[in-house]
Length: 83
Image (cartoon, rainbow, N blue to C red):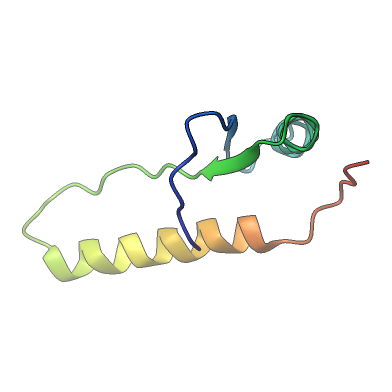
């Protein structure tokens, strides 16, 4: 995944990525708005911070697993079409 800064005149539509039934609709809406306005879509996946910093290696593993889960959600073929 790459992150590119937005141009000052570019609209960026933020979609929170989760397992909710509303997420595909939010993504569809954001994609349509971005297409119509020449903007783009940014997706955000949030995870709870792990407790117990003394478990450094475990915390890092948890972060990596959460990142992989987020990437798999984003990589799923969308069942939406943006006209």
